[in-house]
Structure formats: C-alpha cells, structure tokens
Image 1 (cartoon, one colour):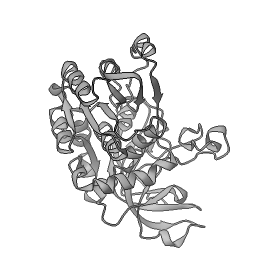
Image 2 (cartoon, one colour; image 1 turned 120 degrees about the horizontal axis):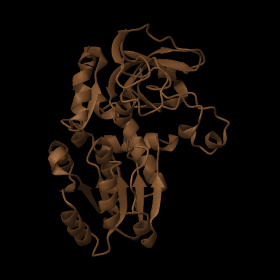
Image 3 (cartoon, helix red, strand yellow; image 1 turned 45 degrees about the vertical axis):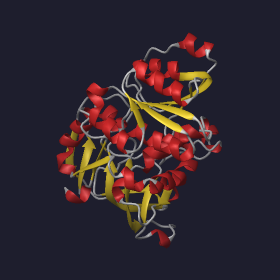
Image 4 (cartoon, helix red, strand yellow; image 1 turned 90 degrees about the vertical axis):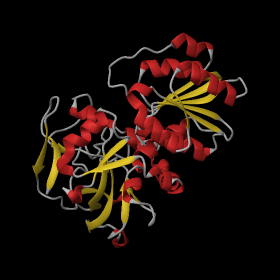
Amino acid sequence: MRALVKVRQGAGQVELRDIDPPQPQPGEVVLEVACAGICGTDLHIMRDEFPYWPPVVLGHEFTGRVSALGGGVDPAWLGRRVVCEPHAGACGHCHLCRRGCAQLCADKRSPGWGVNGAFASHLAVPAALLHQVPDHLPDHVAVLAEPMAVALSALERSPVTPGDTVVVTGPGAMGMLAAVAARFAGAKVVIMVGRPASNEMRLAVARGLGFRVVTDAAEAMKAVLNASRGRGADLLIEASGSAQAIDVGLDLLRTRGRMAAIGLSGRPVIDFPWDRAMRKSLDVSLSMSSSHTAWDPALVVLDHDRGRMTSVVTEFPLDRWPEAFAAIENRTVVKAAFAPRYG
C-alpha cells in the first residue's frame, strides 16, 4: 500500500512509499482509512521539532471503517465507522496511567510518530481505543474528533461556566474547534482574535461558524469589555503558541480569570508576561493531547455542529501531499486532510 513516511531523522525526509499493509495483532483491528487530518504536530515532525521513531507513517488524526480483527476482539466492531484515541503503547500501570492520564504516559507510542499512522490506506490500532462514529456524521467532520478531544481535554481542567465570555487566540483548526466546544459548553460570547494579514481566509471561516472576529488588540479589548460588562474575559483559550497572542490575551482576561493553553510554539522558549499574570492572580493550565473522557463528548459536539463544520476541512489525495502540507504552512486552508482511497 502507498503511505507517507518520515523515513529518517532530520528536517524534511518525508516520502511517499510502498509498504506492506498491516496485519492485526491480538487485541487490534485494521482500519480502512476514510480521512486523515494533518496536525501541527505533523509539521513539527517534518521540521524535526517533535520526537518520533523513523521510519514511521505519519498521521494521528483519522477516521475509518474496521476491516479486519485480531484475536480477542469483539466481532461486533467489524464494519463499524470509528475514530481512535492515539495512545497506543501506554503501559497501563504507571502513575499517570493509573490516574487516567494514559495520553501522557512515557511509554506511549502514538500512531504517526511512535508507530505507523494513518497517512495510508490502512493502519492497525488497539480495539480498546476505538469510538464509534454516529451514522450521519460525515468522514470529513468525524476526522476532527482528535483535535476536538484535545480542546475538550483542556476545558476539563479550565471549564466553561454557562454565561462566560471566552476569548480564543489563534484562528487555526484547534482554535476554531475550541471555540465550538466553548459555545457548546455554555459560553455566552466567544470572541476569536487573529491577525488579518495572514489569516483572512481562516477568519472568514470563523465568522461562518458564528463567532465574533476581531483583528487588533484595541478592537479585542472593546469587544471583550462590552460583552463582559467591563470585567474582562472569564477564559482565554490560547491556541496559537505565539508570545504576541499570549500578551494580548492576558490583557483581555479579568482578575481571577483562566487561561487554557493548547497551542505549541515550536520554540524552546517564548516570552510570558509573568508579573501581569501574577497581579491578576490568573489560573493558567497547559494541556497536551486528549483524555479518554473527552472522546465521546467530542463526537457529540461535532455531531451537533456538523452542518457548519464542513467548512473546516479541505481534502487532498495522498499523492498530493506536498500541496496539502503547503496549504497548511501558507494558511490557505483551515484543516487539510487526506482521503487515501483517492491516491
């Protein structure tokens, strides 16, 4: 089968190769991949900025249909449309696993960087990590389950209270999904902050999703104060990893407000306005990956907003992978995804 492989260490080093199709081991299933999304992590792996074990097929955001079963797997899974938590290899007995945080286990080897992923026609995954997709949820929306689960995992630690004013910095796919999740959780107002020069297309999609969009700090402050009766935002969801966006976002928070960070910067160190955050006595949480408890709710949120979510994903055949990666780099799409059956 054709697969997009990170073949060796170093920047670049990505090739479309023919490899053997996977065979399910005990406790595993093989999925026929219907749609596989490109994540910022895939870009970081391409640039050599994120741990990985080559040669490895990229791709950890995916949906597909169960086409083969390994030993011990419930036969009822065969033929089902599913999504899958990317937490293969978690040990199950370390402190983090026993606390329900298998996504942070040091032994975890997720598809796409630790074991072969979904930028191929088929992949093998543990059956225990599957979640069934609602029948009427289209593949190009179901593929957003993993990043939606990441957003919801952050909101488990920094929850939205009904009536909250929420600000989202970073109008990429993660920011938009976090905004959708915050609205579903009961936020009264969700304001998306982005820069027009590099994000106009994405900001237009955010408007189409029903969000108030602002493009400079003064406009953002006015919008937040109007929405919050002068108090400031209750919650900042920081989805950009940009020091500039963090600086603006913290200004918009009220005293004793909350910041949930879900954006990687791709840099070893970024500036953070420590004293300002201290003076406001902010609650700051940084959230990586997705909890088990976020996955079923992720499908519920996507299903609820499925009509509007179709604008988020642009599909490419796998053999046009350079074009798809460039579209993400150049911000001409919100989320690029591969439909491996088409190439």
